[in-house]
Image (cartoon, rainbow, N blue to C red; front, side, top):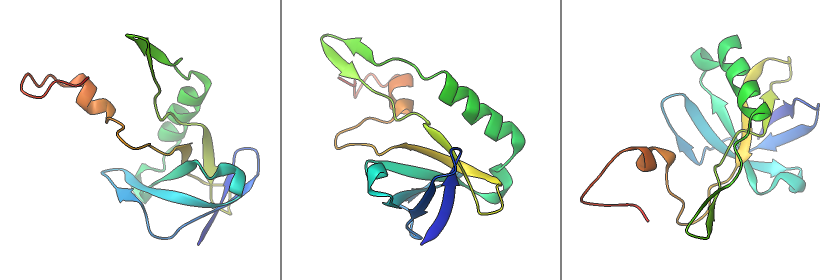
Length: 119
């Protein structure tokens, strides 16, 4: 298990093995506390743990977009919720909601694909 701390100094444990990896880091399940079970942590790779990245995430947290409505359906983004730090207080990533079944990647909504339109 990996021990991290939220910006409000709450201790969290995440699984060592990530749910998935990408260009900037990996996403890990939160093990405890149980109150965060529907959330996960994006843990940045070492080179992306910059002050500039931290400021960007802080801005995103303070400027969360409202749910979007289209044709009576409500769409929600898996948006940054809290910054996380290691045991030395260094920025390492952020907490965000887990994606749910049948969720669509934001990228796919921004790229036109005439052969495979999104709902």
